[in-house]
Image 1 (cartoon, rainbow, N blue to C red):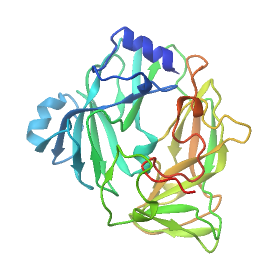
Image 2 (image 1 turned 90 degrees about the vertical axis):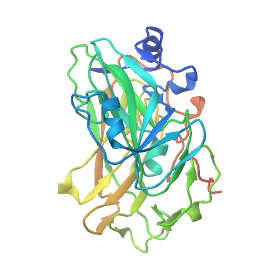
Image 3 (image 1 turned 90 degrees about the horizontal axis):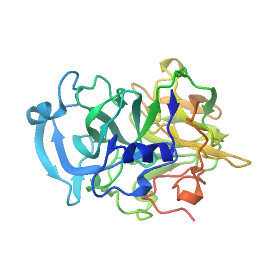
Image 4 (image 1 turned 60 degrees about the vertical axis):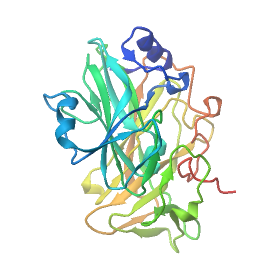
Length: 334
């Protein structure tokens, strides 16, 4: 299977295999993915679910606690579960499938999202030839958030079944960068105000995050606390590749790493490369982490063809020059 790039996605739109709303904008098409956007229809629900052999609409009525109109800005409270219908629908032919992932900003704000399809048996997976609506489950975990129609919290990659084995070309281990006496991580504060996702470069970091400055090249992550860290390694993704971050299993430590795992062609494609920024949370117990500790693996996959529209400054990518960078809603540190 090969990953489709920007102009292939445009062709799917032209052929009505992707059906978009009247508010669709060209910038939703990324180098190797499509940004999906929220419609006005949103529901606070009692529990997460997988449809299996049912349409999502059959389940909404029994699970809904309240309906929310996203034509206006609305508050989504942390640790509550929401389901939003997306503006985009799919009408794929039988040679195309897709997979979804949270956008980088979504992960850095600790917003847990999962794509759901009618009759779907897995989260974030769109079966070959799928025809129907798309829904997004949203669970703000560290901060309450304010959202409205048209915002994008997740993205989707499309794959063509062309007899190529669906396996990565190569992989790169990713480890943590921790250096004593400097800010090497941020921990989300427990009691904060809500974050309006439409406000960029707006919030003071200190009101939402605690800077972690260890005395040694290690520190202890607290149980259930949420952290932003950067990788020791610099990443370079050529314009013939895309990549996906794969977390290690429990054998490497009792923590969960990453929410947003897609890396577009061109990310860090400079002489020195760019570090990855990832999200980490301990579960069950506090956990000791140290510099150079491996936490994930970056798998590289072939694109269907070389991309001429790559991640970076040219297309105003938010994190092309990152070091340890928080979500774009926070004021840049001078």
